[in-house]
Length: 203
Image (cartoon, rainbow, N blue to C red):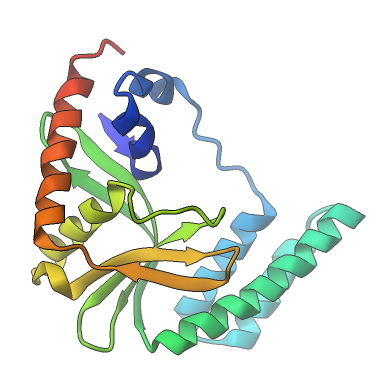
């Protein structure tokens, strides 16, 4: 079974939640926030601020002209500029945007989902970034140490050369952590236990 990383906390709290998650719909329709995401991807691909900003404006102009949409459009444009400023301060080299994760956790289960951004850091390590839309406390979530393990294996580098974190959409800043090996081992043991419990549930 594929378990999206954004659902891991629900399954962690109650493995029975996997039943409801498996029956859920995927969604994924066109929204203004997804246009923002695509504009960020466009920027990292083309490395051209003006073209990326124009791309965002074109995409947002396709939505109905009303007060709510216009206010949200202006907010997204300002947040796009803030994102570019925050990213430039990191001095990262972008590797990929909006990639897909598939991490085997044994027992025929995998962790999947979208990874917002992967970069090379100034110390020749790697930073893996997710989106934090709600200004949540995120570092306690089990998905982050697991993502660190996955990309350490993927890049064949020591654990401490990979940091994981979020772009905080509300605060408009990047936040990162690199977990200690003991924390990584604990997260791995826990996800294997969760995986075994999930397999005992009739879906």
